Length: 106
Image (cartoon, rainbow, N blue to C red; front, side, top):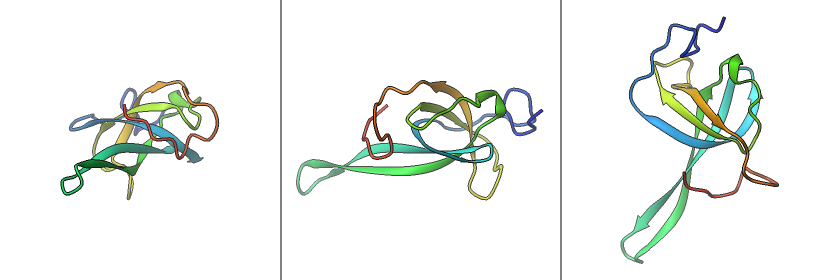
């Protein structure tokens, strides 16, 4: 049904496989995942928290995604202006409360 689905459509997964937490499901067939990471500051011998938001195409077969779920996404060809990843797997929510600002490494 969905031509941009990696399982039923005409899209191949190649390149990077990334994990992140879903923070927005407001778009049609697209979700936003937040990728948290630590960046080392050599001068202070410490790490700082950083994050990137990634737009990911979500096929209708993954229609039960909620905010806070852990999503595995694979890189594919550009599907839209900002979308270059496709949902491959969803792990259910492990966090209670507001998921948006919680920092967790995967």
